[in-house]
Structures are given as C-alpha cells and as structure tokens.
Image (cartoon, rainbow, N blue to C red):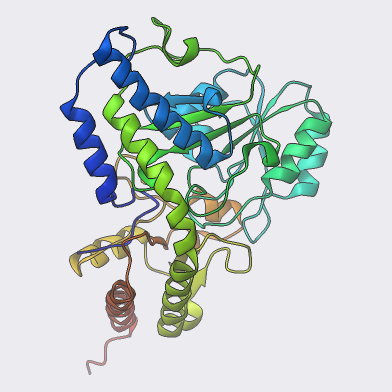
Length: 370
C-alpha cells in the first residue's frame, strides 16, 4: 500500500516509537513525590518544553490534552460568544450559534469581510481561524485576523494542527491568545494534543477532579503519549527542512493529474499559498467515495477530506464555502504527503487515478451497439 493520507494521521516516526516504548518500561505517577514520580515528571517536563518550542511558546503555556478536538473544545467552550471561519474543522464548527467568517474563491479568509464582522461583534468574543486548512492546505492570514481581533477587543485562537512541522510557528508573533496542536499529525502518537494559552487567559475546565496541568486539565498524565509528542515536536525541525522536497513531489503529482483529466480536474486553492504536502483535487462527475474506494483497491490510501467523521464520506464543506458547486465539492480528494513519501508513491498514485478517470470516461460513452 502507498499511504498518502498524512493529514489524517502521519506515519509514526521510529524515534517516537522508541521513546514511547522506553517510557512504557518505566512506572510512576508524575504527581507522586518519590523517585519514580520525579522521573515521570521530568519526562513530562522535557516533552512540554519541546512542544512549547515547536509553537514558539513557553512551557508553562502548554496544556496537554487527549487530542486536537479536546483542545479546540477546551478553548471554544470557555466562551459564550464565538466567531469562526466557514472552513474550520468539525471540532470548531460543532459549536452552535457562532458567526462565520467567509473565504475567497481561493479558500483564504476574507480579511476585509472579517473586519466588518468583528467590528459589530460585542467585545470579548472568541475568534477562531485555523492557520492551515486541513483539506486544501491553504495558509490563512491568522496574524492579520488576530490584529483585528485585538483592535476590537476580542480573544484570538488558531487551530495550527496542520501547520506544525510544515510552517514555522511563532505563538507571540501571530498575536494569538490560544493555539491548538496535535501529535499524530507530525509523526507522534494518536490521542495526544495540546492547547497553548497566553499567560492570564482564563479557561472553563472540561475535565475536573485534580490539579494536573496547573489546574487546567484534571487526570493523570499519559506519560508515554506525552513523551511521544515531545519527541515528534523535537523532530519537526527536520520536517521543515524537508518541505522543499515534498513541495516538488506535490507539484509533480498535481501536474500529472491535471494532464490526465484536463478540465475535468479542479485543484482547490492552487493560486493561494499552500503548505507543501497537501493537494485537494476534484474529478468532476465522480463522487469522492467512489474515488477513495477505487484508489484503495489499487493500493493507494487517500481521503476525501477530514477523517474525523467516523468513516463517512461527504461533500466538502470547505470547497462549498469556496464557491464550488456540488459536482466539484462532492468529487474532491485530499492527497497529503508525509516524511515517508517518495517519488514512487507519486507514480503509483497517478497511475491509479488514471485508471479511475479512463474507466469513468468509458462508462460515460454512449453504447455503440447497433
């Protein structure tokens, strides 16, 4: 199998697996004061420092969670009034009653429209705009939106899950008050995330019953998971150096697929700044679920968009928000490369997609029977 679904879950890095196995060989609760507890606490503290460095933040600003969804819920659930973009992850869009910020045809949050909207929102609202879209890879103007949020007296949050390891992240430079990360998007373990919060920001605890994470998230820490997250965060610097290689592979794949399908292929966000590893391409007239299944049968794993809908395949809300009709939004694939991706993966993917396209063309031809 060729795995091209890194935006759903990146392939775990060998060093991460080794670090977690070593942590599992030890025992001790990080809250215990004896030697075993202190060793566990030291492991957690070291990992926290690595995750903080990944975001350009301070270790004390890191809250470990069970994943990006919990981290997003923690920050959004702390505010009654919320304004989010129309292209956010479901864990952000799940909160009802929020105002939505529109995007341009290229999938970029419309800064001018955002200014008009934020001006009229009562002060103290939470504004949430992701740093990189998980389906298109389009980079969002978070720093500009954060400046507007500050101008009108609001709180700014950014889901930076798909940005980590693909873009340098500067928590203070972005001007945000909170930022979300996830371990399994950068070659770490599933079930580990973090919310970075500025000093003094008050949250409403989702999980109560203990003083862990500086009284912001109760429960005994997942030491092995945290160690794995810390290791992946430390290695993310190498991922940044690998982005030119992945960009070349992604661009090569995009050109090949467009050559195969011509005007029947639509690349979402191709004229916008994108992270190097992501390609969102739609085959007009063929449903995403059909393409995903056919690619899988050909030994290539891709997705139709976010993987957080219990295996369901549905038309992309992101592409709909960008103004694409149902034929495009319902026929989109997300192909996402990772540290493990090679040129041969691109060849296999293009060959499999060619078979799908040619089969679709044959079935669409009228019968030649007399």
